[in-house]
Image (cartoon, rainbow, N blue to C red):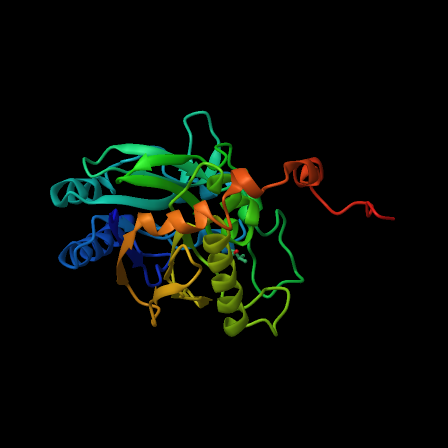
Amino acid sequence: MARIVTVAAAQLGPIQKAESRESVVARMITLMEEAKAKGATFIVYPELALTTFFPRWYEEDRTKMDHWFESSMPNAATQPLFDKARALGMAMSFGYAELTPDGHHFNTSILVDKAGTIVGKYRKTHLPGHVEFDTGRTHQHLEKRYFEPGDTGFPVWRFAGGLIGMAICNDRRWPETYRVMGLQGVEMVVLGFNTPSVNSQRAGEGMEDRLFHHRLSCQAGAYQNATWVVAVAKAGTEDGNHLMGGTLIVDPNGKIVGELPHEDDGVLVHACDLDDTVFGKETIFDFKRHRRTEHYGLITERVGVGEPLGR
Ligand code: CDV
């Protein structure tokens, strides 16, 4: 028997520094209407969906960046998105910069059910980039300056008729991200990303390589954990800085079932059968039968590379 979740990967084109949240929310609502018309019941937007990718801008006084953060959710700017989701009966996930009441800064994503209630929150674990201005880079990536590492871990929620987990951008490159969710039986991982199309520390690593690594990471995570992966870009040129596209959906066999071919606002809709996860979970990736945790200690004991065990 099929368990279908029709998901819309809702890519956003560029958001310039000067664009207001209200304007972005209007674009997100347009995408939601399109997703609904195409049969979707769950829409996924990118990382930091409400604003430009502000961690590319260096600011000496960090408090001057607080205007990019949301201190409540929903708030006046995003309420129309929540209202529209409730009116359409659409579940959703989107990313934003979160400023907590006690002053913590996180790169956050939420799961919102079709009644408009926030039922899940994930805070980005793997923060890329650096803390101080780096003259050796072609562009700055200051996530480590403006965000703290997330404190949520990688929970999986019973949501939309399945087991759903979240990740954010750089998290998708780390096998641990998927495996921790895999061990909770995850059936669909949803994630958003803002990926510059050139490596700031290696000019020769351009868009072709970046897209290759992105697909490789999402496909491996999906296959090795027998889960759907829905990866959604913010794409295009933001104030002169180019972000790659590559919004895609991967099936539990590791195959890409759809990918957007452009860098504008757009939706990629796919009817994902969560029961397609069963074969992998009961055979080659039946963790209970095949994992050998007695040999995995280094995964949690070591952060960086240490002495070889074989000498
Ligand atoms: N927003 C990100 O996490 N971006 C990183 C870049 C800096 C490599 C990514 O993994 O796509």
